[in-house]
Length: 249
Image 1 (spheres, rainbow, N blue to C red):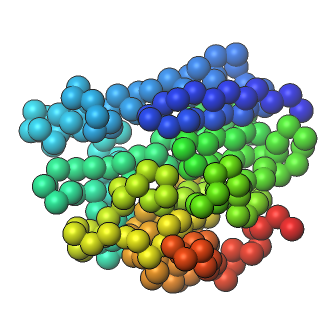
Image 2 (cartoon, rainbow, N blue to C red; image 1 turned 30 degrees about the vertical axis):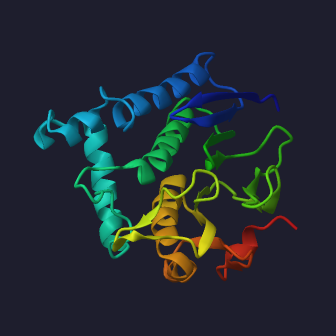
């Protein structure tokens, strides 16, 4: 199978696409989608929609459909996680970055599927959605990055069309906090990966579970349809009861 593969730096992260077939301009269209997401949701752009909303220049009633969808997903996740996922920062402004990446990757996958492509791979900074088979006609094998050894993986997984997201502070420093205690660092664990039916489900619950510290993997265990793998600061790993079914022997 011929697979077109390309990586570009977008949304402050490497975005990788691998597609089998589809229109000639599909890759550019999908990368264009990620560019548009960055223009709308980047907290580092003064001209972004989220910056305008936080600054009070944009009334809540006038936000875009995409912004409304993301904020609705964020509120739903806050309720489903007992407030451990909360995009409202201590200063009252909104930071939806904990859900936008997974949402954007899933939307990109849907664009690819709508173009008639069944075999694909979308990786947005470690948030991954797959479909069909790889170039060798085999199921996609996904690696969980080792938090202490650069360029090493701790587990290889077969997602079988599901999504995966990993939350952690080992790559970007302390950027995930416990919304119930802003002053407390989340330092008990360094990495928590979640497998779900799609990458958005994985991303939103990975962020919340990481904020729970050691209790996060127990939360994932209790959530139907989710499996997880947590690595503590001392190197000890804990996985949910069904996680092993996805591990490549």
